[in-house]
Image (cartoon, rainbow, N blue to C red):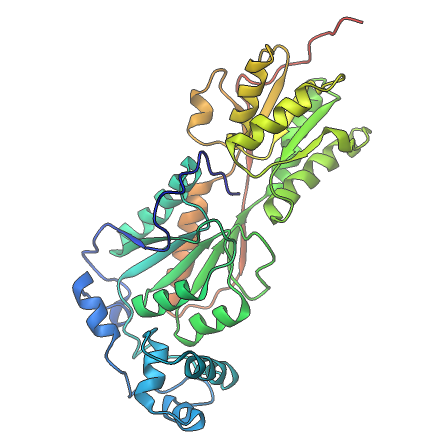
Length: 388
């Protein structure tokens, strides 16, 4: 799902950005009305009265670890002044003994954290918009974090979340390993993944979109126009959303009785530059494709640039279909035919889900997939007759 445009690596990494101050705190006692200067002072107070909802109390874990209860509380609250070996021992005991901070005593701040693996893109703005709308309705601050391009999050991020004591976490593409999931669960910090890059596990709530159906619809549209040599510029093969779109493309070809031609396939990285580079390779082929389905809109724009460089007209000489339906898809010339995935709605759904979990509601459906829809504009047309 990730579509990041031209990247600027000069920005500092790992520093959360807080958006919109909260004015009300509808999650009740779980999220007390505090300002940002008060949050850290509250986080640092040892909460020795806490008792576990699992099989052990905080005091029992402290005795088993051979340390004081305030030290265990420091680990729970993400304080940095604890030796690494001690921290690891406490985390292991918290996991083994099933400790979970009671919701009634948790001092969560009025913060909703949104985590990207890369942040600079029009695609990310659509996701932010959806999460921010829900945060504003709920009277919460929205905090943005970035993992500097990594699909897995470092321990320093986890410790920061524990220190901030957020109401919930939304992870976009990025994932948590089992140990990190256990750390958030033991502090009663709910989390949801948007369009997970890999398999998050059956017990991890996730919001996605019908990527396979979108790839099928895009390719079927080109087939119905009469195209038979249809190229594909996909995303990273390690991402589930990318693989699903490729599988939908392949299914449409096979249903139409057209063999899967590996020479027409290129793997991109969801960036503009990948669409340009792969586009040049495909369009310079002696028997070039008459149409190309790209794994996202930004790669489609890169393909537009490659076609212009080679003197090919869209759609007269080349039909192009993207994926996402970013606002820019309507503005380019010609306007881009694309598969719309409801990014803003996906983010809003994830935000509401994680806040329901913060209120103690059980997740009835851990996986939610919202529908994609083909949006036909002016970048596709029947193939032109080629001279023999």
